[in-house]
Image (cartoon, rainbow, N blue to C red):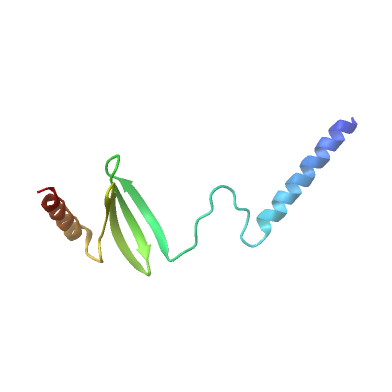
Length: 96
């Protein structure tokens, strides 16, 4: 009976500690915390195993970034269809 009372006491104390930690400013951070900085990853889309399309918000502006094994291409404020056409042309020129 003493063992059961001790286990219940430990569980109640642990629950109270978690409840208090969750109520404090900043909350209870479980898992990976997000880095606070000027850039925010809005969305990531894998195109192939080694190529990714990222939508990044930086300084109030939304940028498209394509990453690949040897580098990256940044949109520089252009609309995505226009930027995609230029990136495709640049890719064809670099293969020559």
